[in-house]
Image (cartoon, rainbow, N blue to C red; front, side, top):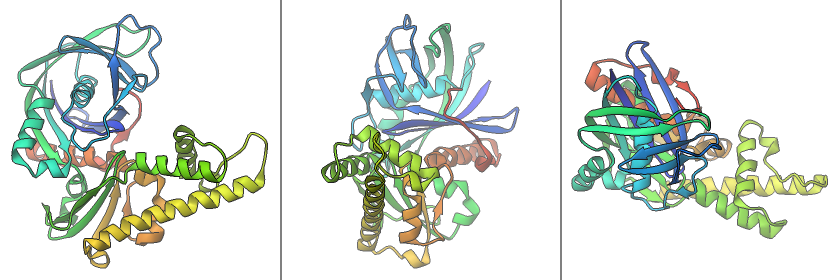
Length: 350
């Protein structure tokens, strides 16, 4: 069977989108970009985790693995290669050797360098038949996945927004602020072309935000580690009133003060982003503006407060790139316009 797959392997999570031609449906899923040595004998596999054998080595991949991606801009590393292949493996059949057309994303700075772009594509996606073995559950069987990468492409990260709505992007200037785990990639696209002079990258992703906030709030109250701080911010997505410290011994005064502290910190963080856009002379009052990346969900109220109500913040901003990539891929290869905005989204494995 032929498969059309897009993979956005980020520092925090690997996002996959796959188009099913028979059902005319798109499915997305993700797992943490983590890996370490693994064993198929493992009978206590954690949630969103799998055991994968590739290139003669057995890895644990996903939530239960020990090693995270290095916090550097480049993604040409073993962890990104293995997580990308694992994502493809979750999409293909165990009954036949699938023919796969794949698109992957690369940071804009590296995309602009043709040699780096080609080197990255050929490193992450091998040529010829690929065989990997996978185990997805503690009591599950080890299955063999065989596929051949029929065609492979690499697109610039942040360009996914323009592919999601090509009609709206034509003859338009669009500013895209991609808040990932490590970096903030701020790019300007004019009629689908990158405006290099206006685009920039800064280490203002979610990892730094949570780290700085946990340090500052620990100084003001008592020790709050990054894991707990992230939980506080995540529960505030649906209910902003819960974005506060909640002591085991009830203390309304700490809850109220910590909420204001967090709110003020996040608002200032977004104001810093705007100052950087102003420094690059973005025409913010006369261009479309979209925020994508998982960190955007944590800051959606502050983004609207600072940048205005007309800014676009997607319901699932972490999937924008991968869905945009897949939409362009299917349009170019199949002549099909997929309804990417109606994709089935899940955090569970395929």
